[in-house]
Image (cartoon, rainbow, N blue to C red; front, side, top):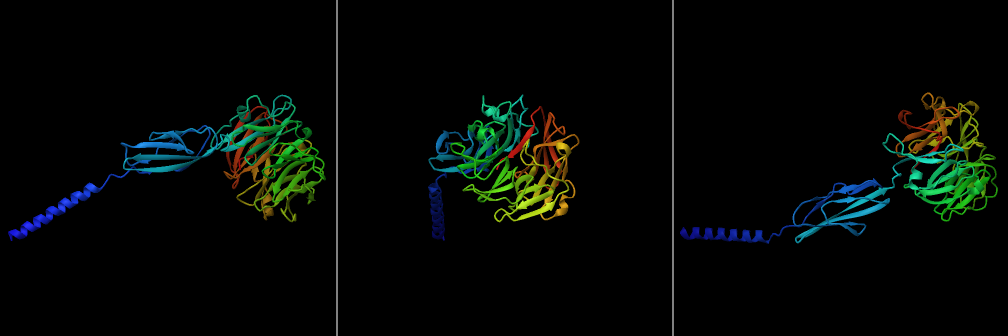
Amino acid sequence: MKQHVRMLLGLAFLATVAACNKSDDVRPSGPKIHIAKPEQTIAVGQELELKPEITQDAGIAFRWTLNGEPVGDKATYTFKPRAHGDYKITFAASTPNGKDSAVYNITVLGQYANGVLVLNEGWFGTQTGSVWFYKYGADTLVPTVYAAMNPGRQLGGLMNTLQYGAIHNGKLYLVVKAGGPLVVTDASTLVETGRVENAASGKAMSFVGLDATRGLIGADDGIYPVNLTSLAIGSKITGVSGAIGNMVKSGNYVFAHSNNDGMIVLNATTYAVVDKPFKATVGFVTGKNGRIYGAKDSLLMSVHPTTFAKDSVKMPFASVNPFGAWRSVQMASSTVNDHIFIIQPAANWQYGTKLYRYIVGNAASLATPFITLPAGQYFYGSGVNYDHHTDELVITTINGPYTGSENRVLFYNAQTGALKKTIRYDGWYFPAMTVIQP
């Protein structure tokens, strides 16, 4: 019996020694990193403090790199971008026992990318045009943002009118009417990158981008090609004459609003005139269904983008030719629904107060106004734009049927027509149009 007990005690001792030896062989692990939000978006001018979670807090070496370049050796890092773009920030933690790393992918927007640009004509003979900015969620506009980013530069002279703007390939193209320049800026920072003085012999009115290197300028006497790299303006396109307003590109065609011919369709490669589908009074916008919309007198017209087949629906009012004192078309289209929005002009060249919505295929949707402005306000400039980021109609008004010094930007729910927000700014600014970021 004693011998049996001694054997059991011996085995227990050996098991204990083995267990201790096994425990001694386990080495401490290295640090582990966890980041809650690896993908983030901020704007130039903002700061972002990065604070990853780490399983250990002693004896660790830290390393931060920004696009491969060392930028820090602490447990946290504050990112202060100076330019917009995409950034890769890597955080590494190491000890003699191991290491771990994690990556933040940060998108930095330009300071004017997260909102709506408001273009003001200016007070003819007294004050030049200007660009203001509405930041999403704000209750005020940031004034004169183009001037702030381009000290000493102006959008034309006192006798010119800032009338049109469009974003193409990351650039904002501003057309200053009545002898002014074509001004090009970065679309998100508004820093000027080029200009053409007295564009199209001082007759420029509108712009459309075609591809990375080509665009077209609509002018008081026709259409001119422009090289977007050099900003050299070519000779006037053959077969097009008279004033040209809004232009839209669809596929390999450009649909231009001509005072002489209504809708003109150009081949976007050769610039040859392909068709003249109808004598448009106003136009154009591209519907969600791809058709090109305009109006002829009291008909809301649409054209197929490749066959040019026409369709129409009766409106309870007649459209009015905008040429003479041209402003961008008072129409907009939804990207969520097949909805087309058009402003009813008032009598005797007064500015209107009613906007209609056409639900494609439903003629009865035009029976009554979708939006009637608050008392004492009148559409001015292009008057309406659709913001695809928020599904809102962005409307510009003044406080008189012919003129006014109270300017407003109104935001309406594009589904219900409910007014969501109004921002007022006073002065003889005359809002020409709004520009929505792509």
